[in-house]
Every structure is written in C-alpha cells, then in structure tokens.
Image (cartoon, rainbow over all chains, first blue to last red; front, side, top):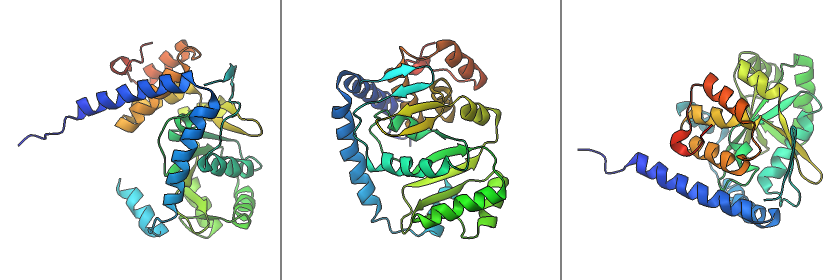
Length: 65
Length: 199
C-alpha cells in the first residue's frame, strides 16, 4: 500500500509558508519580528528544562540519527 | 527587517534577543579568547528571524593545542557549563583531534547545546576564514558566509535544511554575491531552481 503522505506536496506547502513569513519579517521593524521570535524560542527554551534524558541517552539518540 | 549589510558585516539594530541568542553570545564571548570560530548551519537562519528552535548550535574552530583547550575547558566549567561527552579534558581534546564533535551545555541541562568541532574540510576552512559578522547593539557573532551557507543547506537536503536555505535567500536576495553563490552551488553540486533560488 502506498503512503498517503505526499512528501513533495508537504515541502511545497512549507516553503510557501517560509516565503510568506520571510516577506513579513522583511516588512516589519526588527523589534516586531524579533520579539515574536524571542517569545517563541524562549518558550522552547523553558520547555527544554523539563527534558528528562541524561547526557548518555541524549548522545546515543543523536548517534542513531 | 532593518539591517545594514556592509562587506562582511551585517548590523541588526533593536533586535530583541532570545534566550538562545544570549546562550550563544555568552558562549562565543568565552570561546573567542581561545580560538577563531564560526557558527554554521541552523542558527545562521535563526539569528535572522527564522521561526524555529534548535537543540544544538554548530560551531567550527581552528585547531588549538591541548594546553589552550584545557584553559578553555577550565573557564567553561568555572562558568557553569559542562561537556556532555566526557569530564576529562584530555579525552575531550582527543575527540576533537580525531575529527569528532564535543557537546557543551549549561550545567544540569542537555538542550540546547553547542556542537563544537575543529575545521576539517576545505569548505570548513573557507567558512572560518571568510566568516561574516552579525552585530547587535553590544554583541557580535561570527557566522558562515551566506553565499556558502545557502548551498550547504541545500546540500544537506532535509526539508528543514531546504527551508533554512530558502529563508536566507528570501531575506538577503538583494545583497548576496550571486557569483560566489553560484560558485559554491557548483562546488556542492546543488540546484535551487525548484525552490526559487535561481542564480
């Protein structure tokens, strides 16, 4: 049975968003895009503190990729 | 986006720094006392606004001797960093010397971490030698030349890498040296026409 997931179409849709987003970043002052980006990244940063893997498990998972 | 693109310098005023930016800036401010460095790969698109996180920041450095590495290691440990791979500086230096990466994070955390390597390939050496400098009000970060970074991301080829390449091209298409870009695309045997990177 073939995959129902169209990888090519998925990438095309994601790139459409990248173009849209980059045009928005270009159109607004640095304070605006960077504040939104910082809020987003800071929330990921906080979430990473709850990451339960120890270093050995983490390094093992990296090597498997 | 307001930026000034002059030679190898890109000045970004009034950028609100994220915790990831502050992590990178703090680390490179220590690193720069011991080695020449260049940040490559994903963080290069993130610093210019790409809306994604990352678990590691890839940094290349020139080959340093063991004594210098031990001093660097000592300063990092004193400033609440730790090496994920090993505790022994000799062992860590051996890994770098063998072309492997060592990972460094803030004590008691694993993510985000710095993936640090000695330069190895010719393109690594070009990245280091011809690096660009991103300046914010009080800080600066050395990054890989964009004309090399974009083809390299296409070369890596995952969806995330292609998106990074397209994002950088969209942001800097008027400033990029298209001759250099074409040259690096040819060296890496990549094409960007399918993604709108048409040089």
